[in-house]
Image (tube, rainbow, N blue to C red):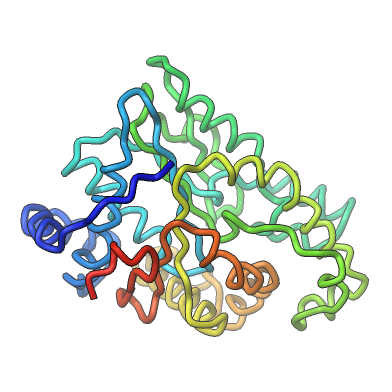
Length: 316
């Protein structure tokens, strides 16, 4: 059970002052050109303080961050992880649902046997959820063994070799998990009958792909999602804003890795076509995730976030 605790604005401001230079260095690495002080004091640090109050000896605290494409999951996760490690001296392990995609070969097999749209990574059924469960089980085991955390290369659209996976030694104090569909629930069958966008109308008129994805979401995915002690949801104002944010994310990636050339990245139209794969579940999540989550953070624009739930974490 989560402990409700009062978070002081002065405490948050003090933590910011102690760590502001290192936080700026992290922002520079992430190509965040103008780090917003309010973003840290009013959003990141209150959440970090709240998490620190939940930690118990000999117990691994697990939380996830969920939100649409380009909503800021990785940014928020990285800043929280940094402060937990550097200010609170916590051992933190983190990974994303993107790190446990099925291999390219496995997805091509699914596309041939079930539906062509399954060659595109991302929807439920294209992840190795058993691997995710094994990672958490390994991290929580009370030993000094090394846990391997996979890495997925979006450049090659495939899992990297095990020799390149991250290694975590021992048991962490905190496990952070993030992903666009984390916390998603299956829809009722009646809702799946009508296509919601041009992708579904053109490439899945009989609903084979939509139903298969929904069936997968109702199974082992729920076993993984239910493991977490704290659920954080990043709320976007609209699906159109998610499209904008995902395109902004792509442009930032281009700027950070110019050596690869623009041809290695998606165009604006390709980004929009890609995000349509996730539109149905994303819009459905907007209905219940603000209710089901312990912390809700609304992203208004770039680093303009505001904690909406719970009230005691909001200083505004």
